[in-house]
Image (cartoon, rainbow, N blue to C red; front, side, top):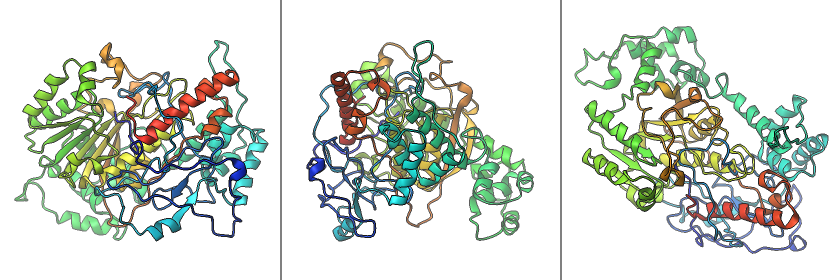
Length: 577
């Protein structure tokens, strides 16, 4: 697993803190908002300015709109943001780090916590500064009063106007999502403790889940479950499902690859009939095999049997103990593939040796099969990793199994105070791949469809936002590469490993899926990655969520500081594995 690493400590400008009394009043809605000055981005940075923690007594940070896609002003009040600490009790992934460093910085608030992922190794340092300044805005600026009123009215209806966590959740939602929930007549139930002493869900957690469900309804039937190539095609384009399912493998694959809405399916079918079959062609390609077999079934078999481009290189992200990379290497060798494998781990080799006694032997065997093994690789920062400078547009296949952004003890994965890291991980991961996957390349992300950390909608949304087209979702148990040695990906692996039949807590193995995508760059400007922001320190201090509940004033202040410091390590790029 990969835990994304944002800006390095000390590399972002510091934001001076001011008391509320010193803060400037918000400009009227019709006037130009005040734009604070910002230091120029550092060369080689991975992300452009995005997130800044706001101290309880401090001023909210600035954000460059050209750097990150945020809900429109009419959809989001810029003062409330969405985030996500994790919980050690639910959805603990294989590679999830557990604890925050004890010496996390307290007051060093970087001006820019996350930055847009470059696709070509550049940071945009030479961008027109005047254009950059013209697009900047303050997170403290409120949204138009109509939007603010509408959200506050909903909170007042639920008697949650003073619930800081609920405000934070609602602010991170679009206005369409809020209206969808409001129309249902639903309302969050008061927090109650279960008979066995376990905590129930707070109103903020219930609201967060309801909003996520409203967002995920847009993905249609299935809700992250298995869907074939015809179903995913019809979610993008209109067509006759029965006619498409009757097509042969050759004709259906041609339609899937060539249809862009400019010509009808009937016109493309005439062209597909003229394409020579494998027997008629002088050049043999794997995807041309079984040309006259049923199309949807054969395309699904290709994906399950991992019949990828034999000439293209393959990249594996976040393979903690490298057993998946080993399985892939053996698989490609058996098929006679000549493309190499680049296997990566998030941890350094020194840490891996503490957890996996066999790691040196595994690395040696991989290298004997012409694979390249790289350690200390962040899958969201490939463009500024000098080891990838010669790998631009090289990969025909990329794999990332069960992504997770790390555990925050005392919070469940789906809690709104921690979920921001998981969603950001997927959006930044897919954006980072754009400079390294060649057109038509395949990306496969294995995850549980019921996971509450990295949700299926995070994967589908992050891919779509970076022009990776959803091809198919197949059950993990049907994948030929399923039988690798799973690990937790953290210090627990030094003492125990997951059993062969063991799955994540609160998840069923039958819900494990492989989400398959194909890179189809249009050549047009893509929307900026939608990045969620963490809660402020004030939000933490004035809420009663997770480990902050049932705490005295001093204890709560200490716990809030610990969580805040942990979040600060993420935005400063400190390794917490």
